[in-house]
Length: 171
Image (cartoon, rainbow, N blue to C red; front, side):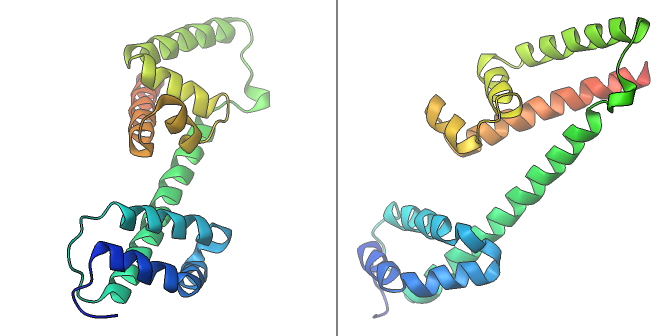
C-alpha cells in the first residue's frame, strides 16, 4: 500500500482487508449486519472518483466507522418513530363505542385526507411500510428511488400525522 492510491487501488485494499473490516464492524455493534455494512462500504468505494487517497487503510476504517454511526442513528430514529407510533394507538380497553366510534371514524377520514394531500408516492410508501410491513429497502426498490427518499417520505407522513394528532388532542 502506497500513499496516493486511487479508487481502483482502494477497492483492492478493501477486498484484501475484508476480514479485518468485517470484524471491525461486528465488534462495534453491527453483529450479523457486518457483512451487509461491508457490502455498503464496497458500493460507496466503487462509485468514488478516481482520485488519490494518501492512507487507504485509515480511509476505509474511517468510512466503516461512519457507516456504523449512520446505522446507529437510523436505528435510533426508527425506534423513536416506532415508539411514537405505538403511543398513538389505542389500548384494547379504549376501543371506541357509540359516540367515540363516530369520532374515531371522523379522525380516520382526516388521517386519510392528510396522507392523500402528501401525494400518491408518500401515501403509498407510508401504507406499504406501516400497514403492509414492507421494508424500506424493498419499498425503495419497488419505486426505483433511493432509501433516503423513502425515509424522507415517511418522515413527511409522520410529521403530518403528528400535527393532525396535536389538533385532535387540542379539540
